[in-house]
Length: 319
Image (tube, rainbow, N blue to C red; front, side):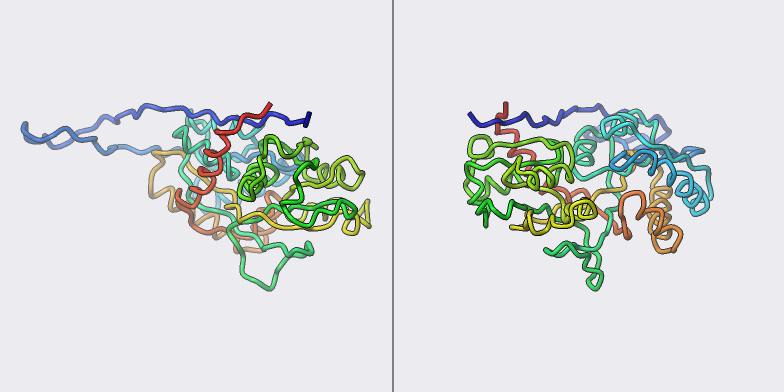
């Protein structure tokens, strides 16, 4: 029997809307009931910003102080930047208004939005990655990235169809690029992600690459190009673990704010992150934190494809 591990299930919570008290002009008694616009907005004395620990926490902790100082200077107010224990903790902190700005990953933003905890304002920009693993620095920055399918050079896998009956290593079942997009790619190509392949949770993207390198898996899905992480220790990794194909573009991660934050402050936050990314010092910080090269304005509909893919997954039963 093929080994299939359980994937995560996103919880959908419905939050009530709390009406803000205020003085308004009385409507005619014959008018139909309407939803009152808020008369007050959240305007904190200290803006609280939180990062998701997608990299080593010590590295993020070293960068949060300089980022805090730059944001404070740009905004002209006190700013506190902290690192969350995980994405769920950040979402909960935004729901309870303990954090005002969250740097949320793609799928995490969609979950936070569904829970009424976040509104996207910016999306990150990065250089695209070529099929040979090189950064395409001579091309414009992009607001999305791709997951790659790589395979053992001796596996005979040359397309998605060739994965049938094979063992696939992934970083985790909650990874957008490691599992959400790949599982949907299989479905788009007529393969059943539940029964036609065996998944191995390697625990990280570089771990998935090494699972193929060491013969524990026939193929792997990772972000592009995760082979760069291990090439120093395994110089022949590109010969033994070969590129096969890409998934569709995945929307980049976000900078999101809590609903009800003062709109004027939201605009200043947008401007501050964009301005910081355009300075040498600021660029170095955001690159060290999340490999961001810059930012562009974002709207919620940019992430509809994520919702489509997650909805399809709800029809699958793993276990």
